[in-house]
Length: 217
Ligand code: ADP
Ligand code: ZN
Image (cartoon, rainbow, N blue to C red):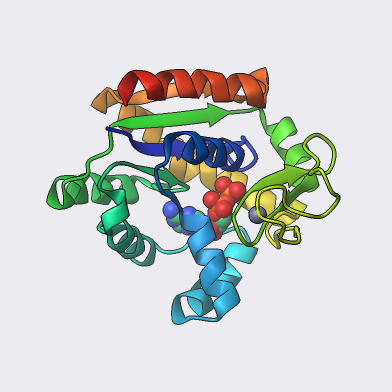
Protein backbone atom coordinates (compact mmCIF):
# COMPACT_ATOMS: atom_id res chain seq x y z
CA UNK A 1 0.00 0.00 0.00
CA UNK A 2 1.34 3.44 -0.90
CA UNK A 3 0.48 5.64 2.05
CA UNK A 4 3.31 8.09 1.63
CA UNK A 5 4.77 11.08 3.42
CA UNK A 6 7.02 13.32 1.36
CA UNK A 7 9.37 15.47 3.42
CA UNK A 8 12.31 17.78 2.91
CA UNK A 9 13.25 21.46 3.27
CA UNK A 10 11.58 24.14 1.11
CA UNK A 11 13.13 23.94 -2.36
CA UNK A 12 14.32 20.33 -2.13
CA UNK A 13 12.13 19.33 -5.06
CA UNK A 14 9.20 17.88 -3.14
CA UNK A 15 6.53 19.50 -5.27
CA UNK A 16 8.11 18.36 -8.52
CA UNK A 17 8.53 14.81 -7.30
CA UNK A 18 5.00 14.85 -5.91
CA UNK A 19 3.55 15.72 -9.31
CA UNK A 20 5.54 12.90 -10.92
CA UNK A 21 4.58 10.36 -8.27
CA UNK A 22 0.86 11.06 -8.51
CA UNK A 23 0.96 10.99 -12.32
CA UNK A 24 2.73 7.61 -12.28
CA UNK A 25 1.07 5.90 -9.33
CA UNK A 26 -2.42 7.44 -9.44
CA UNK A 27 -2.78 8.31 -5.81
CA UNK A 28 -4.19 11.62 -4.53
CA UNK A 29 -1.74 14.43 -3.76
CA UNK A 30 -2.48 16.02 -0.41
CA UNK A 31 -0.37 19.14 -0.09
CA UNK A 32 -1.20 21.12 3.03
CA UNK A 33 0.52 24.15 1.45
CA UNK A 34 -1.75 23.88 -1.62
CA UNK A 35 -4.83 23.48 0.58
CA UNK A 36 -3.91 26.58 2.58
CA UNK A 37 -3.19 28.60 -0.56
CA UNK A 38 -6.53 27.55 -2.04
CA UNK A 39 -8.28 28.69 1.13
CA UNK A 40 -6.42 31.99 1.02
CA UNK A 41 -7.41 32.70 -2.57
CA UNK A 42 -11.04 31.79 -1.84
CA UNK A 43 -11.02 33.94 1.30
CA UNK A 44 -12.35 31.21 3.64
CA UNK A 45 -12.15 31.43 7.45
CA UNK A 46 -9.15 29.09 7.41
CA UNK A 47 -7.55 31.16 4.68
CA UNK A 48 -7.98 34.34 6.71
CA UNK A 49 -6.33 32.73 9.72
CA UNK A 50 -3.43 31.31 7.70
CA UNK A 51 -2.62 34.12 5.25
CA UNK A 52 -0.28 36.36 7.26
CA UNK A 53 1.43 33.38 8.92
CA UNK A 54 2.20 31.71 5.60
CA UNK A 55 3.39 34.84 3.84
CA UNK A 56 5.84 35.49 6.68
CA UNK A 57 7.13 31.90 6.43
CA UNK A 58 5.67 30.72 9.75
CA UNK A 59 3.87 27.49 10.52
CA UNK A 60 0.10 27.36 10.71
CA UNK A 61 -0.97 26.17 14.21
CA UNK A 62 -1.10 22.39 14.68
CA UNK A 63 -4.79 22.22 15.63
CA UNK A 64 -5.89 23.81 12.36
CA UNK A 65 -3.52 21.73 10.26
CA UNK A 66 -4.22 18.39 11.91
CA UNK A 67 -8.00 18.69 11.62
CA UNK A 68 -7.71 19.55 7.96
CA UNK A 69 -5.51 16.54 7.16
CA UNK A 70 -7.74 14.20 9.11
CA UNK A 71 -10.77 15.29 7.10
CA UNK A 72 -8.91 14.94 3.84
CA UNK A 73 -7.44 11.49 4.63
CA UNK A 74 -10.88 10.19 5.57
CA UNK A 75 -12.19 10.85 2.08
CA UNK A 76 -12.88 7.94 -0.20
CA UNK A 77 -10.12 8.60 -2.75
CA UNK A 78 -7.44 7.93 -0.10
CA UNK A 79 -8.55 4.32 0.33
CA UNK A 80 -6.01 3.02 -2.19
CA UNK A 81 -3.12 5.18 -1.04
CA UNK A 82 -2.15 8.82 -0.73
CA UNK A 83 0.81 11.17 -0.97
CA UNK A 84 1.05 13.61 1.92
CA UNK A 85 3.23 16.56 0.96
CA UNK A 86 4.15 19.15 3.60
CA UNK A 87 2.58 17.23 6.47
CA UNK A 88 3.62 16.37 9.13
CA UNK A 89 5.93 19.31 9.80
CA UNK A 90 6.07 19.09 13.60
CA UNK A 91 6.40 16.26 16.10
CA UNK A 92 2.87 16.97 17.35
CA UNK A 93 1.57 16.56 13.79
CA UNK A 94 3.47 13.28 13.39
CA UNK A 95 2.02 11.95 16.67
CA UNK A 96 -1.48 13.01 15.62
CA UNK A 97 -1.08 11.34 12.24
CA UNK A 98 0.08 8.15 13.90
CA UNK A 99 -2.94 8.24 16.18
CA UNK A 100 -5.38 8.89 13.33
CA UNK A 101 -3.84 6.26 11.04
CA UNK A 102 -5.39 3.14 12.59
CA UNK A 103 -8.60 5.00 13.38
CA UNK A 104 -9.28 5.73 9.73
CA UNK A 105 -7.49 2.55 8.61
CA UNK A 106 -4.85 4.34 6.60
CA UNK A 107 -1.50 4.33 8.43
CA UNK A 108 1.63 5.68 6.73
CA UNK A 109 3.72 2.99 5.04
CA UNK A 110 6.63 5.00 3.56
CA UNK A 111 8.46 8.22 4.37
CA UNK A 112 10.45 9.81 1.55
CA UNK A 113 12.87 12.53 2.61
CA UNK A 114 14.68 14.57 -0.04
CA UNK A 115 17.51 16.81 1.16
CA UNK A 116 19.61 19.53 -0.48
CA UNK A 117 22.25 21.90 1.03
CA UNK A 118 20.97 25.30 2.25
CA UNK A 119 22.84 27.42 -0.35
CA UNK A 120 21.19 25.48 -3.15
CA UNK A 121 17.75 25.76 -1.57
CA UNK A 122 18.05 29.51 -1.40
CA UNK A 123 18.97 29.76 -5.06
CA UNK A 124 16.16 27.48 -6.17
CA UNK A 125 13.49 29.29 -4.17
CA UNK A 126 14.36 32.62 -5.82
CA UNK A 127 13.76 31.19 -9.29
CA UNK A 128 10.70 29.15 -8.43
CA UNK A 129 7.40 29.73 -10.23
CA UNK A 130 4.31 27.69 -9.45
CA UNK A 131 0.99 26.83 -11.03
CA UNK A 132 -1.84 28.11 -8.82
CA UNK A 133 -4.24 25.67 -10.45
CA UNK A 134 -2.54 22.24 -10.38
CA UNK A 135 0.38 22.89 -8.02
CA UNK A 136 3.15 22.04 -10.52
CA UNK A 137 6.40 23.93 -9.97
CA UNK A 138 8.99 25.29 -12.35
CA UNK A 139 12.24 27.23 -12.17
CA UNK A 140 13.11 30.17 -14.41
CA UNK A 141 16.76 29.01 -14.49
CA UNK A 142 16.70 25.25 -14.45
CA UNK A 143 13.18 23.96 -15.14
CA UNK A 144 11.44 26.26 -17.59
CA UNK A 145 7.98 25.47 -18.88
CA UNK A 146 7.69 24.91 -22.62
CA UNK A 147 5.91 28.25 -23.01
CA UNK A 148 7.18 31.03 -20.75
CA UNK A 149 4.89 31.72 -17.81
CA UNK A 150 2.40 28.96 -18.68
CA UNK A 151 1.91 25.61 -16.91
CA UNK A 152 2.80 22.59 -19.09
CA UNK A 153 0.30 20.39 -17.31
CA UNK A 154 -2.83 22.51 -17.27
CA UNK A 155 -2.21 25.75 -19.20
CA UNK A 156 -2.73 28.10 -16.23
CA UNK A 157 -0.60 31.20 -15.75
CA UNK A 158 2.39 30.67 -13.44
CA UNK A 159 2.98 32.86 -10.40
CA UNK A 160 5.68 33.51 -7.81
CA UNK A 161 4.57 32.56 -4.30
CA UNK A 162 4.42 35.41 -1.77
CA UNK A 163 6.53 33.40 0.70
CA UNK A 164 9.28 32.79 -1.89
CA UNK A 165 11.18 35.92 -0.82
CA UNK A 166 14.53 35.86 1.04
CA UNK A 167 13.10 36.87 4.46
CA UNK A 168 10.25 34.35 4.54
CA UNK A 169 12.55 31.69 3.15
CA UNK A 170 14.97 32.11 6.07
CA UNK A 171 12.08 31.70 8.53
CA UNK A 172 10.87 28.58 6.70
CA UNK A 173 14.35 27.09 6.72
CA UNK A 174 14.79 27.75 10.42
CA UNK A 175 11.38 26.20 11.16
CA UNK A 176 12.38 23.23 9.09
CA UNK A 177 15.53 22.55 11.11
CA UNK A 178 13.88 23.24 14.47
CA UNK A 179 10.47 21.64 13.99
CA UNK A 180 10.56 19.24 11.05
CA UNK A 181 14.06 17.71 11.08
CA UNK A 182 13.33 15.82 14.35
CA UNK A 183 10.81 13.74 12.38
CA UNK A 184 13.70 11.87 10.77
CA UNK A 185 14.49 10.09 14.05
CA UNK A 186 10.76 9.57 14.65
CA UNK A 187 10.27 7.71 11.35
CA UNK A 188 13.61 5.92 11.49
CA UNK A 189 12.35 4.37 14.70
CA UNK A 190 9.17 3.31 12.90
CA UNK A 191 11.33 1.63 10.24
CA UNK A 192 9.66 3.40 7.31
CA UNK A 193 12.16 6.22 6.68
CA UNK A 194 13.94 6.52 3.30
CA UNK A 195 16.45 9.25 2.51
CA UNK A 196 17.16 10.60 -1.00
CA UNK A 197 19.91 13.02 -1.98
CA UNK A 198 18.22 15.84 -3.91
CA UNK A 199 21.53 16.86 -5.52
CA UNK A 200 21.70 13.93 -7.94
CA UNK A 201 19.20 15.69 -10.23
CA UNK A 202 15.43 15.62 -10.58
CA UNK A 203 15.33 12.71 -13.02
CA UNK A 204 17.58 10.54 -10.90
CA UNK A 205 15.56 11.26 -7.76
CA UNK A 206 12.35 10.38 -9.63
CA UNK A 207 13.91 7.09 -10.75
CA UNK A 208 15.11 6.18 -7.28
CA UNK A 209 11.82 7.07 -5.65
CA UNK A 210 9.83 5.18 -8.30
CA UNK A 211 11.93 2.09 -7.64
CA UNK A 212 11.09 2.21 -3.95
CA UNK A 213 7.41 2.74 -4.66
CA UNK A 214 7.20 -0.09 -7.19
CA UNK A 215 8.74 -2.44 -4.63
CA UNK A 216 6.16 -1.42 -2.03
CA UNK A 217 3.08 -1.09 -4.15
P1 ADP B 1 7.43 24.60 0.94
O1 ADP B 1 7.60 24.81 -0.51
O2 ADP B 1 8.12 25.64 1.76
O3 ADP B 1 7.74 23.23 1.39
P2 ADP B 1 4.49 24.29 1.28
O4 ADP B 1 3.77 24.64 0.04
O5 ADP B 1 4.53 22.87 1.68
O6 ADP B 1 5.94 24.97 1.27
O7 ADP B 1 3.84 25.13 2.51
C1 ADP B 1 3.75 26.54 2.46
C2 ADP B 1 3.42 27.11 3.83
O8 ADP B 1 2.16 26.59 4.29
C3 ADP B 1 4.41 26.75 4.93
O9 ADP B 1 5.54 27.59 4.93
C4 ADP B 1 3.52 26.93 6.17
O10 ADP B 1 3.34 28.29 6.46
C5 ADP B 1 2.19 26.38 5.71
N1 ADP B 1 2.09 24.93 5.98
C6 ADP B 1 2.06 23.93 5.06
N2 ADP B 1 2.00 22.73 5.65
C7 ADP B 1 2.00 22.96 6.99
C8 ADP B 1 1.98 22.13 8.14
N3 ADP B 1 1.95 20.79 8.03
N4 ADP B 1 1.99 22.72 9.37
C9 ADP B 1 2.03 24.06 9.49
N5 ADP B 1 2.08 24.90 8.45
C10 ADP B 1 2.06 24.37 7.21
ZN1 ZN C 1 -0.90 23.64 -13.80
